Structure formats: structure tokens, C-alpha cells
Picture 1: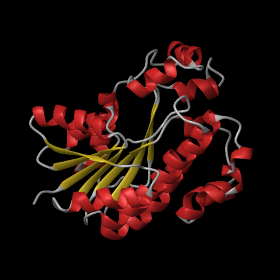
Picture 2: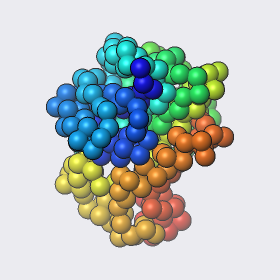
Picture 3: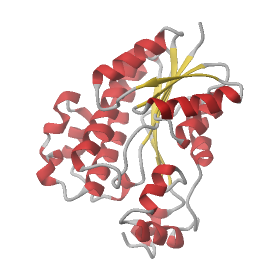
Picture 4: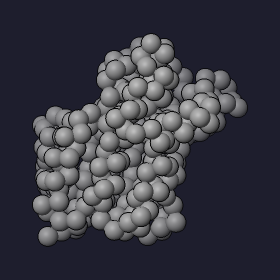
Length: 274
């Protein structure tokens, strides 16, 4: 039996974090498309890791419970990396809310019940949650604490109150951050920790969909006018995850880390003026 890392989302960011933190562990990789999980598992196994692919639908509680049960057959789940999700150019409003918002909330809840004492998790949020119009304290509390199966019934999450897919994505990512804060209290009962990371544009296939989509010029303007002057890399996100998931981050839980090359700063106080 080994300690297990549960990795949801077979993409570049998740794989970078798993390569940084998953050595010596059984890495169970879940993705809605099994072939994506198989590709990442092969890359990691060829590099000396011990990874196994599984099919998993983040929007389905029974699917999440199934992959947790499969992971526990290998040992205790001591690490979770959630890098699954869809972008504003990939899915309609309803799907973004069901996957990125509801699905992440369910995953945090279910893994929180299964995580080994002393375990740790990170979920990948987004800079988008930081740049939307501020919500009221009551709305933030609703996103943090509403029972999971009631989340999508909240007035601010009703499709008729959402302007477009970007607005839905922003709400989902704001909910991710607030949900992590609330769940960190429950995870703490097992001395386990959970944090979120909010990347800017990181060069991945998902980001390329955005760059080639209707907001491509908007994102290229972001690169030009943010302090870093470029998009980020998956390994730079893994640098932050390594801090959060290692003993050096032992006093960090319920927090969100913005890593966007200064894009949000430029939006609020610089030339971007988002």
C-alpha cells in the first residue's frame, strides 16, 4: 500500500504539480476523457512515476465518489490536486456552473471526508475570480457555505442573472476560493490543509483555446500590458503548489494565491483597466 495522490484533470498544470509532488506515491489521474488520463499517466510512468488513469466526471457526485473509492484501494489519500474544469470558450454557462462551480464544491466536500489525517490539497482557481465586480459579504458567504446541492439554486447563479460565459466562469472561480476557505475548517478537523491557486494565463491547450477564441485579442493585450509582459508556465504554478503542499506551507490553509504576472494589478491600477 502507498500514499495516494488524487489528480483530477489530466492537463499541463495538474501534471506539473504531480511531477513535483507525486514521487513515491500512487497517482490516480481522473479525467472526463479517459484517453487524456492515459496520455498523462504514460508520460509520468515513462518518467519513473507510478500513475494509473481513470475516467471521472467532475460534474457528477457519483463519479467523484467512484474515483475516491478506487484511489483508496491503493492506500490512504494524502494529497489531492484538482486541475479539472472548462473555460469560457469551451462550454456554455450551464456547463461552466455545473463543472467548475458545483463540481469543485462536491470534490472538496467528498475528498475532505476521505483525506488522510495530515493530508493536503490544492485546487486550481483563476485570476478571473479576482477581477469580477465585488460581491456583497452575504453573497460571498452564500458561495462559501450553502449546502452543495443547493448552490445552483442561489439567485446570483441563476442563468438569467449571468451575462455570458466569462461572467459564469468568474462566479465559479470566486466560489472556488470561498469554498476552499469554508472547507479548510472541516479539513482541519483531520489536521489536513486545503488551498487554492489562481493562475493568470498559463500556456496550456486550454489557454490556446482562449487565445484562438473570440477573446484572443483581449488576452494578447493582457500580456503586453501586465508587469510580467508574458503568459506563465505550468511549472511556475507548480512552484506555488510545492510550497503549499510541502512542510514549508504547514501554516497555510484556507488561502488563495494569485499568480498572474501582475495582470490583476494592471487591471485595477495600471493600463489594462479591465
